[in-house]
Image 1 (cartoon, rainbow, N blue to C red):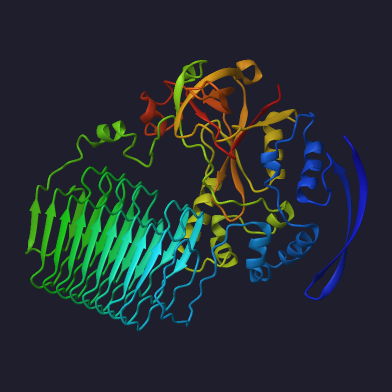
Image 2: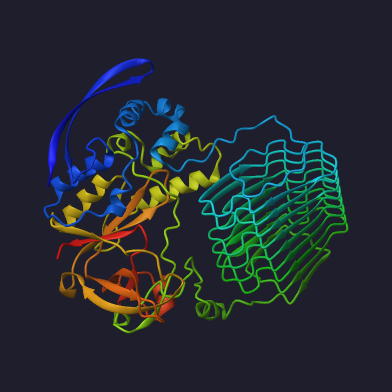
Amino acid sequence: MNSSIVVLLLFTTLNSVPFLNVVVAVAGDGENPFTRRGYLIRYWNKQISNDLPKPSFLLDKASPLTAAQFAVFSKLADDLNTLSDHLPDFCNQANLLCFPDLSPSLEKHVDIVNFISYRNKNFTNYGSDRIGGADSFENYSDGENVVSDNFRRYSRDSIGHGEKFTGYAAAVNVPDQSFNGYGTTSTGGEGKFSNYNGEVNKFTSYGKNSNGAKNEFTNYAKNSNVMSSIFTNYGETGNGGNDTFTSYGDDTNVPENTYKNYGAESNGAVEKFTSYRSDSTVGDDEFQSYGKKSNAAAVDFENYGQSGSDGGSRFSGYGIDAIGQTVDFKLYNPNTTFKSYAKEGITFANYSNQSSSMAAKLAEKGKMVNKWVVEPGKFFREKMLKKGNIIPMPDIRDKMPKRSFLPRVIISKLPFSTSDINKLKNFFHAGDDVSMEKILVNSLTECERKPSRDETKRCAASIEDMIDFATTVLGRDVAVRTTENTRGYNGNIMIGEVEGVNGGNVTKSVSCHQSLFPYLLYYCHSVPKVRVYEADLLDPNSKAKINRGVAICHLDTGSWSPGHGAFVALGSGPGLIEVCHWIFENDMTWTIAD
């Protein structure tokens, strides 16, 4: 190893006060010693005893902060409020996941606009007082990892204003949109939400006091994961509103929607829920004071929740004190609570229990009654790793937002606990943002969860943390393994030469999986009794090698839940079979070096 000692006198400026850092570094492997990557190589060489090639895919996730930037932000981190005041620069320079600050804007827009391939904008007061016109949001934010848009007071007081949300936020990983006051006191107009996808969407006072507004939600959030929409005061005191929810939330996993005061005190409103939540998994809807004190409202629930599994809906105060309201439930899945429901004007057609054989149907479709959605090839048996076998390969692509680790020094100054959730929300400018709060709470909760039986776990917020945990469990002579690339995903692959790590014997490993968090965070854990394999993956037609896959087989599944997706896909139950899976892109498993 070629190395040299370098001394750098680094002058930086913080709040107009210069200070001096004296940095002594040893450059190794031809790396600039003053980059975070250079520092991690030195740490690696100190903690790991072998000279195996270092994993570039992991070292590439080192913080991009320069020495000067690191010195400034590290000093700012001594006071969370001070660093938070510099959050946009911090997020940008450190490559973090932060939602843009879309504070209310007084700017108005009068031109007809096509927003094609657009992203992360503030549409507050957009289209206010406009007469006529149409806007098209076609392929808006398509394929983005994080989408945060604000449509507050959009189209307020407009006349005949039309919007088309076609392909809005398609294939998005972390969408967050707010439609507060959208279409308030508008006259006429038409909104179309086709193929609209969202994890958390807030429609507050949408269409309130509107006159003759028409909105279509077609394929809204179809095939989404953990969808949640909030319709508060939607269409309240509106006149002649007409909303259609076609294929809303179809094939979604755990949809949760809240309709609070939806259509309350409206006049002549018509709502159609066609194929609403069809084939969805679990999920809950709450219709609180839906249509309360409305006049001549007509609601048609056709195929609502049909073919869905478990879950339920709560109709609290539905249609209370309404005049001339008609509600028609056709083919409704009856796992529902009707509390204080209007006693007249309600028709239940074919209201019967459709879910008795649903578990078997869903298992055939690769779904489970609980949270699991199991795609072909996600789990397999050990015997399938045999040369010449053709098996399906799941989608192993990394779909997480692109982020970097933070330096350990900075991380040590940031809160990392569910008890400090308010501090974290304030620091990341989350405010009332539901999506960011869910991101923070979900990852922190998983990190704080007690280990399962025989499991050793740790959340690694830096590469140093990961190295320390792996070497504590396995010793200093370790190697990092991951699947070479993503070729072959969502198709069939042929198994080529197979090599068992450590001679194919039962061994220990430390597997690390990404968690969704503002900075790069890995959930690392070790369980006993595993075998790890590396296999050439071939194109089944040409027999050419396309990938080198890493698979881990869990031999003891006795502590797994009976509803685990592996048993849905493979049959059997806890402790009765071994379960194997591939290591996905940017995930990894640490093993004792061969």
